[in-house]
Every structure is written in C-alpha cells, then in structure tokens.
Length: 194
Image 1: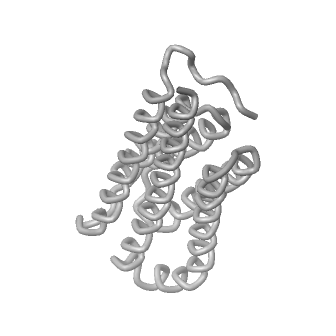
Image 2 (image 1 turned 30 degrees about the vertical axis):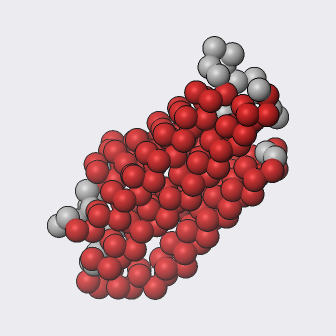
C-alpha cells in the first residue's frame, strides 16, 4: 500500500519533517510525565496534548511514503480522543479511562494493520508501537477492576493519576521513536536514490 509522497518535497525534507514530528511527540511525552505534579490532571490539558500529538502524527503521515492513509488514521484517532476530553470534560477518573482505552485499542489495530503493509525496520517499529498501545490498553483494563473499588470508596488518588499520565507518556515515546525510524529510512532512501 505504498502511495506516492508529494513530489515537490525532496526525500531529505520529508525525512527532516518526520524527524521533527518524532522529537515533538517525544517532548509531549515529557509533558505527560509532568502532569501529576499539578494539583490534578485537567481534561483540557490532557485533551490538548492528545490533539497536539494527533496533529503532529497527521503532518508526519502526509510526509510518509508508505501507509500514509493508515498513519493519518492513527493521528486522527489521537486528535479525536483529545477533542473528546476538551469538549466533554469529566472530573471523575473512570469517565476518562474508557476513551483512553478505546483510543489505545483503536490505534493498536490501525498500527498493527499498517505494520503488515510496511517494510524493514519501519515494520518492526510500527508493530512495536501497535503492541505497546495494546499492552497499555490491557494494563488500563486490568487495573480498572482493582481501582474501581478504590475509586468508588476514596475517589481518584494521585497514584492512579500518575499511572494514567505514564500510560500517555509511554505511548507518545514509542510513537515518537517509530517516527524517528521512519525518518531514518527516508534519509536512507534519499541516499540510495542519489
């Protein structure tokens, strides 16, 4: 499912753009790690981070040669999850966990399928990113049953919020690293074409 990248951009320019997107998402992961240091995790802040990550993914997807549509879909799903937090802010922990689980599971499916259509190290990193999102979704689901009792009795606790922000950070880091690998492959293709 290789589609033609925009002809007006050189391979090196595409690679630089994808690399910048990868670093931007890794920087967002640092912001996600710092979220618990605030008094509480704001739905607006979390939503803005997801929207930003989604838009960065969409921009990077437009620069890719392979699986552009699927990479765009993964970015759109991320941005939509962020918009859900902004448009429908919830104060409780559990109303926000379910959209994150759905976001991670859907991204995992999209990236898993994209990995079957990719080649070389990009295939590995895309599959790794899909696997990480699935693992994170499963961790949230399995932790949900235990924390349901805790939250129903005591309300949201800082350790729950902290683990939630680490889920976002882990997904962002792996996604950023995947984009750095895509950029590396784009640079390699540029060198081979010259």
